[in-house]
Length: 370
Ligand SMILES: Nc1ncnc2c1ncn2[C@@H]1O[C@H](COP(=O)(O)OP(=O)(O)OP(=O)(O)O)[C@@H](O)[C@H]1O
Ligand SMILES: [Mg+2]
Image (cartoon, rainbow, N blue to C red; front, side, top):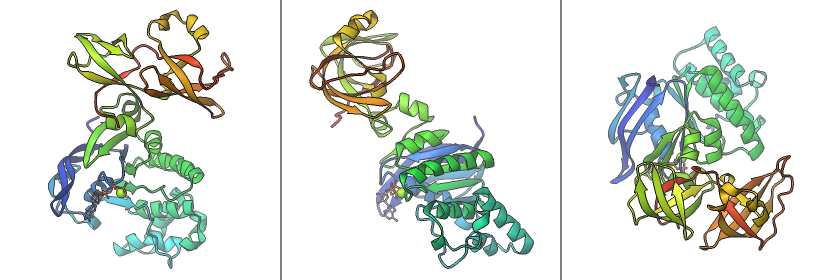
């Protein structure tokens, strides 16, 4: 748990007078796959560049294994970066691209050949050492870039959107390869993406960033299921937000008014009576029932919200529905086909009821969600 390799405290970066990164506190753990996730311009690349030493720090500190990193120049930090553009030398072979860094450090002869061969083997490119980048596919070029970073045997590998130039299928394949590589080598990976699915599927932990700050640092599962803010909730997946009013705060829960009906929320969060909250529900949390089906679900009847089906989108293994509640709020619901209920027939305009398992709602402070 406390085996942190890099301690970041109060880190900030200003360009001119503009702070683009502020108050970053982050402990990166040895051997973890940590992802920085956030929209364009939120400061992900800047944070990586500060760790790599490619930018100077404006505030705060960075300590790698207890040692202050600030006075150490980029080329002497035990950290390597894989950039989005790969930045391979087009006129050099794959071997020479990978050998470039170690050569600069004076490694040569049999030692150099062994290290380059190892790095190329790690990314399964041993056979292609004599080719030039122009003779490789996008995925192979990406693997050369990774080999070039690994050949220096870094403590940490920083990857700035390394997969964004690849098409969808290759990207999926490289996600799996990268994850397996990281597990096999046990090197700490700090990975940047603005693709939430990529972040959730690859990472041990995700730092969700917004406007130069970290809004939540957590496991993928907690970021998705228990987002700390409306921003995080909406950034990491599709979010239904149902406005509700707080009637009463009790030690073990809240009484709310939701869609004109009383609703009991089990979460012990504190909200002011009379104030407003948002209930967050993911599309897959919701069940959509016909009136006849609901009659067979007594435990849900009191809590069911009446709605009208507006859109039915067939997706093969699932059906996505857009339904409108009586208050006018539109919600998305995903229904999955299974053996017991293979029908899933819905018609546009059909009257239905929406429910979800007790306690699955997440309560968030009310914000203008537009
Ligand atoms: N050298 C620079 N000079 C001035 N402003 C900069 C510089 N580098 C970055 N910025 C600004 O800092 C902010 C954060 O940029 P950064 O590149 O870290 O974002 P990002 O999260 O990596 O975005 P993207 O997903 O688009 O790559 C942006 O507003 C950007 O314009
Ligand atoms: Mg960037």
